[in-house]
Image 1 (spheres, one colour):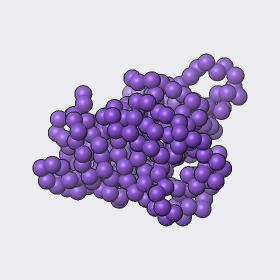
Image 2 (tube, each protein chain N blue to C red):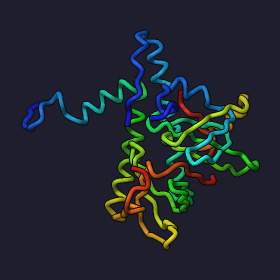
Image 3 (tube, rainbow over the protein chains, first blue to last red):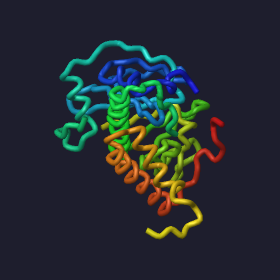
Image 4 (cartoon, rainbow over the protein chains, first blue to last red):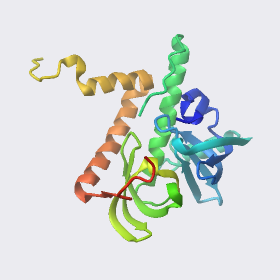
Length: 96
Length: 94
Length: 62
């Protein structure tokens, strides 16, 4: 069990809406904005907005998460953009 | 499986905070899985194995991914289950 | 409610899972459980219908 999986939801939540670089156990690095960390598997969901319309998503499985480096904080606009990314139609607001 | 539950917060307010946060994080993850269905997904697995498949569904404990048209190094497997512990990362486009 | 099963009511797995969900997710437990159930149903239905086989046959990581 790695250190990342031991964290509690409040700790994982600190990474949400931030741009991070995750080093996975195969040494591959993934960069993107954290949409969520699954509290069951500790997997990190990263979104990378390359163009205005498309987004690519990379998920590092919790058991394979090595170093997580925070690159920058997201602003309100980024938080909103992220919260809409997996919602059909992109308009709905997630319930809190 | 669900294990890391901090009992340290005897204060019911911080417990509620933790529950609410866990709910938002989990709901978001489930949404990402739903968004992935019928999409082409690339899997980076242990032993430098890289495969591509059309995603179907995951079980709730995130132990198995059900996929179709899995492109293995030895050809296409029409229907397959991928063990999540074999997977290091996966990616897809929205 | 009559109870005829071999398992005493206090140990019904569904109920235990409900209690665990409540402890983890609090007021949102029903909503999360609903989403999870839908996801698991899709998984089970697809597995029934498509009969997928594990790939690779032997786990890469034990």
